[in-house]
Every structure is written in structure tokens, then in C-alpha cells.
Image (cartoon, rainbow, N blue to C red; front, side, top):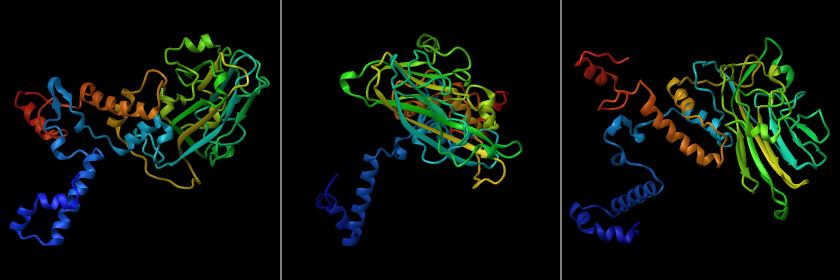
Length: 366
């Protein structure tokens, strides 16, 4: 970027000819610095945008893709729930005004005497008493399989910090639905004792991981979605995504108590080593006596784009990186797999133009 003196010397002849005053020349320089700053921050001007919405092969130019704010917030909640700038909602056709809020819990789990340590989470629990939101192992844990709290020594339960309690969801009062949820953990022990393998797991239909035989390492690895990483000091993640129709509906969370669907486990580690974990979830609540109701949005197209781009495995890298790739995948999917996008020249969304072009060949745009 030019200094003020360099800028004025460069344009002196032109400004002298135009008779610009000293104040006007200073104003022109301020405009120049603002424009330069926008370019360095990656703001794309009109000249950078694609001239046509579709490039060769009928693929959508991603510079034309524009998702609604509610869709982008929902995508963030699904991929990186720690990065939500505002309480998100599910942009489907259920547009009831709702109370939107997030919950969180943080603590430490320890590898037990058999070399196994873990944290698990019930993503659906939107209240903070009676029923645990999840559990974690302590140093006295002696099993070589994963078990819930209450069945053995060495597994402690934890609550989230929700403003709601069990009684707020009595029949005929309130109902909630989950928007996004995740649990992450990283190693905090000594470097000389760092060892083991981290398994990031979600039950395929978001049911209880402890509903059948207590899961072993081999059983968890048998699921295609499970991801693995060597123990290091980076965060590792187990993140919820909807998989059945009930996941998008309002339900009584009391009926889902004990539905521990997310598990982050460390196998083959040195006993006594510690890991910090961080759990976050976002909810919508409808009913009576709620503290604040805000509008919910409906964006079926954006909702479909999010659903179509859902990852098939648990993340193996930081969600902020995954989120950028996810948004790009959403744009690509809209341009290649959605039938509402006409592969025609012209401005995106101009239905009149598309219909006129198709009418000329005796077709209809549906």
C-alpha cells in the first residue's frame, strides 16, 4: 500500500487538473486505504465474481451460492458446535417460535488400571438434574470394556449447565429438540507416558451405546463411522449428526434419559494419565413459561444442502477446517445434485428466464 505522500505524488497531475482541494485529496486517500484493506482481508469485489452461475458441465460456480444465515448457523452447529456465534435452530418446516440456548460441561477423565479411559455423552438431555448428561472414568476404573456410570466403581456422571430441570418437561409442558452437539478431549498428562489410541464414536442411529453388550475396542472399530487417532495433545472429537426422523422432531427429553450416543475412548494408554474434555450442545425448546421466544426459520433448500453434505465418518481434524470444506461441499452438492437448479445461462434464481427458455422447446420447469 502506498503512503499518503506517495499516493498524492502519483496522482498530483490528475488532481491538479481537476482542481481538487487539499481536503478532497485527503478524502481520496482514505478511500484508497479502505479499498486496499478490504482486498487484504479477502473481500471479493464484483469484478471477482463469476459472470455465469454455471461453468462447464453444468456445475454451479460457488461464488453464486448463497446460503441463508439460519442454514449457515445450523451447519456450524452440526460440524463445529463450539464455534456457534448465536443460538442456532433447525431450518426445516417446523417454524414454531422457540427458546434457543446452549449447554456446556468440562472436566477431566483418567485412564484406568486396565489402560482404558473415556467420556460419553447423551446429546439429547436438555435439563440439568436427576439424569446425568454423560460420564467419565477416574483412576480407579478397572474394566477393559466401556460401561456407564452406576454399574461399576471408577465411572462418574456429570450434569450440564442447562437453565431447565427435570420437572420443566413434565407431560403437557415443554418439549425440546437437539440442534447440534459434540464432545472433545485432549491429552494433559506427561509426555514420557503419552501412549494409546483415541476412538471417536457415534452410534449409527443415535441410540444408547450401552444398550447391548458393553462395547469393546474391536466392537467400536467395527462401525464404519468410527475414526481413530494416536494420542497427542490435539483435540479429538465425537460429534452428533441426525440420522433418524425423530432427531428433527420435538420430544420430551425425559424419555431419552440414558441415551448415551457419543463416546470418546482411549485404549492402550498408560494408567493414570489424564485427558481434559469439553462438551457442548444446542437446543430449541417449545412450550409454556419459557424465558424468551425467538423466530425459527424455514429453509428447505439449505436444510437439504446440509443433509446432503453430512460427513460419513467422525472428524479426524479440527472442525474449523472441516467446516470450510463442508460449506464448499454444500455449494457443490447444490450445483450438481439438486433438481431445482436449472443448468441454463442467466442469473441464478431467475425463474422467469428459465421458464421462458424452456417454453421455447415445449418443456416445463418443475
